[in-house]
Length: 570
Image (cartoon, rainbow, N blue to C red):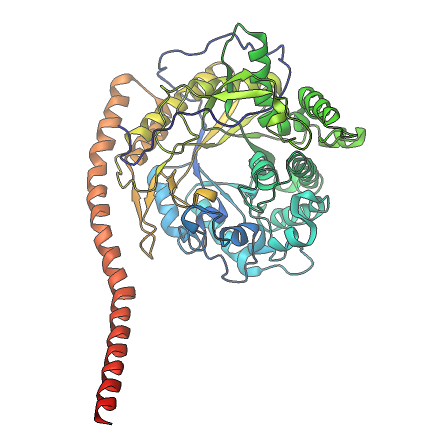
């Protein structure tokens, strides 16, 4: 079933980047197979996630400093419908409520991020540490552990302190390496006795490309052809420094793990018999995931990135490559700084080779790749216009990571599907289908020998979706953003995911089909509650807006009438 508000879009999307075909991964092998019934390894961890700016709200409360997203979202025209994350899900005030939702789902872990400006308002530790921010995360972590839910904590999910952006230029400046290390070290000191899974950065590709290349995300800079590469360079160095800090100062005492969460769509060659398409598809993946994974696992950027960006730079009359270089010392320092790899994955593209002959002044990350992205019009597209359901691409990506990076320990840190704003249909059968198919492809990858240890459904709640505001919903739980209390309602996918967790997989066809039927039946009561909610919201609006307005108008009309009578008398 398609959501009622889903917009069907069939288009060719933006262009992507470069790498030469690897020898380990078999690009010509098709993994498209039937559904596999079976269970996950014992101890597999099931979770859900969210992030600070997207869920917490309380943007200026209890000593929190401004983040780049606070500032960016308040600029008119930057976010759809000029939404902001000012209040969002009010998660800052709903720790116990939301943990009760996690218990209902029977989650093993919850992934959240720490807001840097909430605990260090200016971003510089020596300026001030906000104890109320520390207390908030202490309470969140303690309540999770009391309920046997493991915290997986992201240190940077895009909300850079605004002062660091204004003073230094944010991730364009090498000084961020030390500032971020100070922040991370404080987090290890305050929370590391209880947190054993740390993620340095979430999806640095978006931070670099959308923050400093296209300007779609905060801080909104359009430094085409250079900004993304420079930001990524400093992020990789920052990640490595934080890993070494933990390794030398905290690991023996705290016995935790430090990784990074990288997002990657899969790129499939349009024609698997065409070597140029195969090379283009690998360029796509290397310019996306490999841009960060290859330095962290192998010490340097993918060779294809160095080749393509270097050659394009020469063609554009630039003396040196726009892709920065690591020194020999930096390469050895960065290599191996990953205890586990987080993978965020949502969708797939078909990729074909395309020569981009852009001349001087038109250099960009996208034109550097010499490829075009295509989508199959038959792929389901339930919500976000960029997100098509292509489950087999997930297994392909996981196997690529296995062959390219020595089969590292993997946690799937983000996987899910959205629907559009006006949907109030809680019987989200399209999400059930997405989770069923994608989780099954992950199970097949584990059967292939990929070392996946956990899965994080994205996301626990509907939340602020960056430049899309509240117009897209990824949550297992529906949040009524019109209501001041931001009530949560379970969608049908809650029951379905809960049954996957309880069974640790897919026991047999009859049982899985039964899950689906019961999940949709159970959501009808939630639908009735939600259907009544607009009336409540309407009554609140009448009380808070209409009544005061009518009163004010009545006073004004009375005053005008009184003046009229006085004038007539005179």
